[in-house]
Amino acid sequence: MKDSNIAIRLIPKQDITSIVPLLQKLGNNSVPKALLTERVQEMASQNYQCVGIYASKVLIGTCGMWFQTRHYAGRSMEIDHVFIDEAYRKQGIGKELMEWIYVYAVQTDCRWVELNTYVHNFPSHKFYYNQGFVAKGYHFVKEL
Image (cartoon, rainbow, N blue to C red; front, side, top):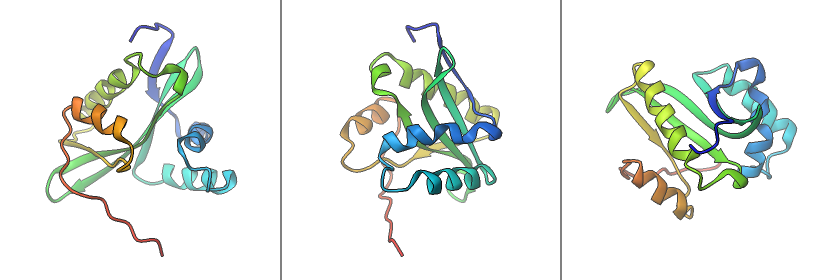
């Protein structure tokens, strides 16, 4: 990482709603802010943690982490809503974030890190392939 003012650290549960503006930039504009805030607070009461990327104390990026035990992997971490503000992209921050994630996953006894990414998000596919991830399947959803 080039900028020494960049810090990566866990976001305390009491500050978890600080990620809402970044989630809105990620493409959750169809979810009203109040509902998004409510959902994030509920997530924080589950097996969920969130890491923040800060530039001089300003939150510029985020990555959620779900912890579970999978029959095929054992204890695992699933990362989601990875987002870095556009002004800070292409500076190696994403790579540093992923290194932080891998270390934290090992520290929390995870044997596996997994993620989903939208099929149309080709830049993320390239990034994750370069990080050593492999596509193992499709993530299907059915809205009810």
